[in-house]
Image 1 (cartoon, one colour):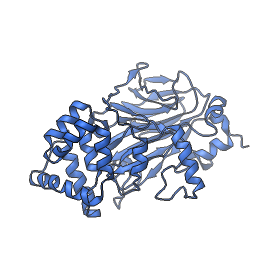
Image 2: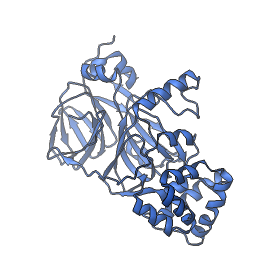
Image 3: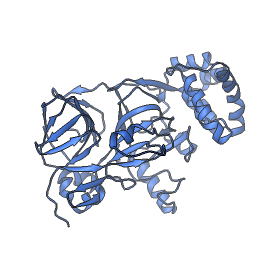
Length: 401
């Protein structure tokens, strides 16, 4: 076993170049060149085996998962006893230029069973038709760093009735919904043949093309964007467009967050956010994507109950820190804001912290400077002080105290 003295270390996040990603925010944040206009969708700051961050030591570099495997003291005995030699959370920055898929995540029981079944079936971990990338659940919280639009859970009965009666192309669903409920009509829409989907959505596309919607707080806007995004590529209408009308459309302002537990259907539509989740990459997709779609698996795990979106505005822990509480025991996300020379002192270290500087700069323990775009790891048991530059903003991932 390698012995490496506990210290604050700089990390280099792993970039995911998914086609829906923006082309400027993450390159400008991290200082990466992007002359060819490649999409920079996600910055992963964790030890997930699919894309671990890199630890930048004075005389070497190594993947973060390798560091924890060889020096578990950096995680701490309590954490390794519960979660093993890996972080329980995965920290990300997302830049959503084009809408993400209709998706949801499994609970722990479903994740463990699905991961085992796909392994036994011999499906490679990197196969495009792989649903379970690991054996973990994936509850998650996101906090908007810009104006952010997303879909989140099924609408209330009152709002569903309004949608089905006010959108002409969906009027035919109202009597079925009234007598049979949301589960029946959603299953019908998701399982119908593609030819029928095209027939049903063609009139909607014609209406929207004749009067281009401009209000991002109305589902027509996102339905039109989905038509423009996916039909030229596939020649078909994406059935995920129905979900745009049946799910809650949520607009978050910078600093506002939302939590998404297992089984809650959702889709990110546009904006930049900080996201913290259990250490997993398990996703079931049902539309609005060119990636693998598994409608039966999505319907098997989806929660059909109406959801009233709960916007999380954060709770003040101190003069400098706002915490975004969730019911998940695997992670806690907070925002630290420091004026010039203002200090933040860690109250408790329960497992390692990962921090990223989004604005300004900080000095750690009066010895290590970090500027905008820098990410760093504080191991278990190491208390630390931050001293702010002018108007410094950091986001911190850790465990609930």
